[in-house]
Length: 193
Image 1 (cartoon, rainbow, N blue to C red):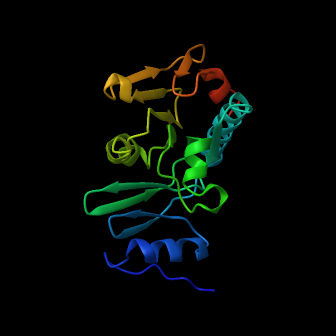
Image 2 (image 1 turned 45 degrees about the horizontal axis):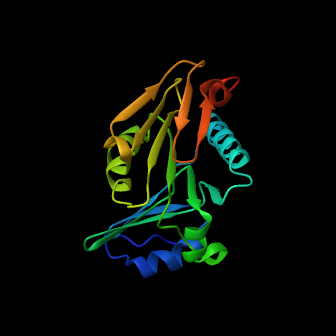
Image 3 (image 1 turned 30 degrees about the vertical axis):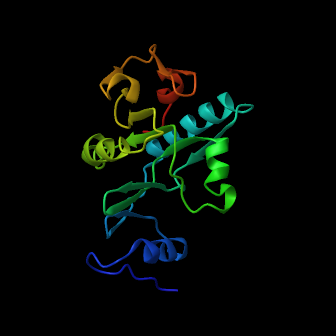
């Protein structure tokens, strides 16, 4: 099956939501435009997997749902909508059920979003997405994990989105929204080159 991405800014939200599940590749939707996602490197995938495992394990018996990069986050702005694929999303179980649970095609009310930042995506992750994610009323923390160096940056709503950065492998990043103390060594040690 050959699926074509419509050209220009003519794709509606409804067209995108119909098109995206049939596509062999993932696409983000930005106010009418569709952008194909770049495949991650082994290092990127290892970091994202470690974050998922640590978060999932920590929240195992808690009322939360944790999702990796195949779950879209919907952002509604005045007269525009956006759909992004973060590397990790945490949403409360009641909110997840209210949004449709397993039948949902996207989530709207995450508490925590994590992006693994590569040299190719850093401008989008650090600027565009950081700004857009702030529009989500339920979002408490936005976490950026550098792929190429030991650096975890956390932005919190409660701290007016000012960055808190951890750099040393001995540092422990505090994900306050879910009560997780995350050693940077757990994220970065023995990664693929």
